[in-house]
Length: 376
Image (cartoon, rainbow, N blue to C red; front, top):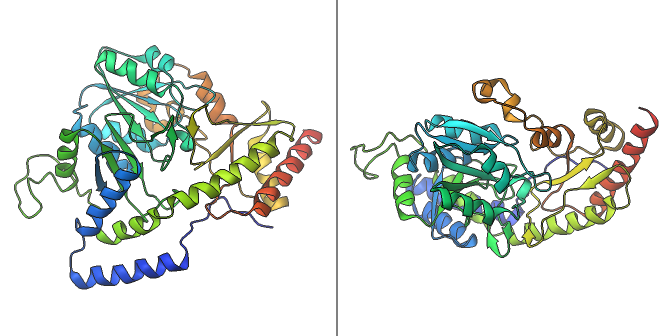
């Protein structure tokens, strides 16, 4: 049996509906910032219990627009070092200075303590990244710390479609949140992103920034230094149709995760990263930690070549403070994130994964770990 690292799921009926809608869009000539975009914004915002959605061209664009709307130029922005480079790039391109923070080992996320360790008088924004769809149980403490200091909390929710904590969905904890619709995400529009916010000023600023900083769609008076961050109608209708599958996809992924939880309890040498109490993960990634000293590269090679199982990509394999593109901002050691980045694996989870596939992953993992243990 072959189990790929990722599988993009568009049922036949959805493909047919998207194709028909695209034909109508092309016939209409209204290819951007139209009715499908507005509906996608409204439905996605409602699904995450947030008043305003602003569709943009990517999750990276969503982050940069939020940070520009919060006027971070010349100030410090705190991010976890174990995040995708886009989190850092968005802050730098918005004119901020990056400050890297360590994370909690249980959720791969910032904690109030790790944020407090790196606060500066110039801190304006803290970006909380929901790695793999996990929302840290420390989210309220982080928000309280930010509120106490007059700092904005922004959520990088690129992984977190449909995830929640204590009944509150991702995107509703901070001043604003950025989501991604890249092809590997649980909900995709091919390319695209979404800003969610309850702040009318951020909403209004984002609408201006995404369309070249123009005062209005049809005019050519520019009041901000914006960019071409629009989402096309073709992408919007793709995302809108796919979004209807969110509950179904989450149910499948949670069943797979429950099977993995039970299976890993019977496998020596690896521990799952548990969802915090009150948490409701979307299992965009299923995180697990092999025991220290396990050769991750050999484990992945063994699984793929001998068992046909491709592990999902790490989140992430190298912390940003150790990467050349961020050398100017890399101060100090961040030991927890360094260990997690070097050691964790992500078991494959698909939105249409079968029990047989999940069981094959577990059996293959047990066999591969046993092989590595006897052949150091």
